[in-house]
Image (tube, rainbow, N blue to C red; front, side):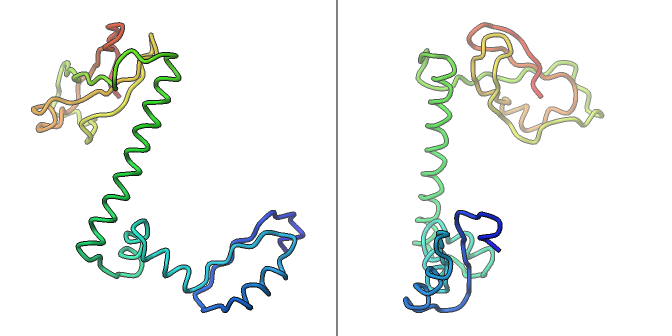
Length: 169
């Protein structure tokens, strides 16, 4: 079927043990299509690595040891730092130059608050792009606004680069 559909590769998953000779035989049968085989031992190895601990807990109900928890969170934090670095580099590319050492944070202003109008964001902040100058900045609720969830009303933010006021949605 893979040949019929001109597939370039096949990923084969099995919860069975496969010997080296069985894996070689599968690769020969699949040739010239590339074959990547995930057999019992390889799947177990993936689940016993820091990036697999969460999946192992969620789907196989094997709890993490304290050491595994530390490794899992360190791995996850590293991914978050990489995302942050990439976001900063995209911001720099978009603007063409670095004008500050990070993303500015501005407060969200609440106008005409109406407790009964329950359109609100449960999150206290998000990244925004100024519609006027293209500046990327973080809109952040103040501690008191986050505490009371800022029910309804119009919320605005002011661009730190050009001063344009726009709606926070």
